[in-house]
Image (cartoon, rainbow, N blue to C red; front, side):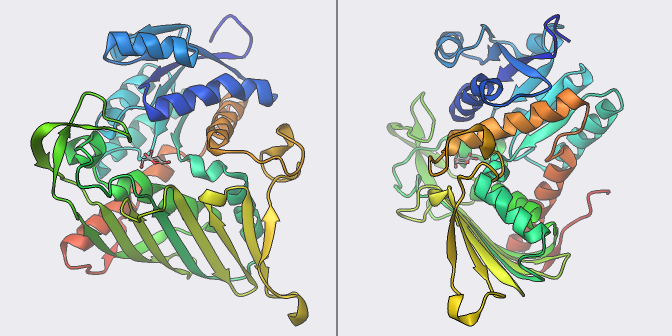
Length: 396
Ligand code: SOE
């Protein structure tokens, strides 16, 4: 622990899109929320020295390093925040936990079920020594999504019958968009399924309190060859010359599912939904009502109350900006909306609250392993012409 009371010194690995989003949250969280622990933005880590040095200054970190192993070994670091591509999550997180660091790891937890299981084993061992771990499914922290969960929990929807979830993007619709790491299986594990499908699997299981038990999956790769990327390889990457390489992940993944509480579900994850930029859409239908959410209108939740008099029935648009809505008492007066970056501030809030009080934050690595098992079942089903496939149990 730091000599400054309740201070947790963070070492963050990765400085691209997620690194920037996490930095914004670490910088903001203790200025907005009164928490039992304070984050210090100690060290940012990346392989390219010039780029990570620039990122340290721009994003507000005290120092930078190019070697994650020495970062983990430092005794002036308490938390390791993993914002790298999926192929390094397991190695970094397992080493960090063994070194006694609390770990926050970006989603999806790992590239394979085996890696995720090894991470759970490391987290369970570390937990006995008071070392905490969490996976960063940030959409749980949208106030309207947390309100959705509250409505389900308090029985306002009755018995849940349908879950309808889609995560729609369009950033690779152009066949000339280059072969960035998110399109390579060895780096990303899978395509739309793991990158964005994982979010809606986690989100729907969390809001409903039900787990997916079996699936029938379908995946498609529409563009099989793409130009190789130039050095910059983010979501706005450009191609480098005319050389091409194979796309080794799914462009779209769809599946039917059964949940253990009796609901039936449909899921769709695609980066080919032209015009849909970040449409995380969830609708739940229950015996007493329904809710519907779309991240592109993230400050709103539609609620249908089937118990209202017939003359008053219809979907109501709840503007989720009141102080008594989840996370919002610390922000702005009603009607003053929040945005994408706040989901990460809320994530860090929950992490610091748990670590600061000696509790385990959620979603845990076990929760994230269960998401991985669902994705694995979808992939195996898709490989067998959508054959019905049970989700393997967390305890193997
Ligand atoms: C790219 O599809 C991406 O940045 C995902 O990796 C994030 O998890 C998602 O929130 C936004 O889109």
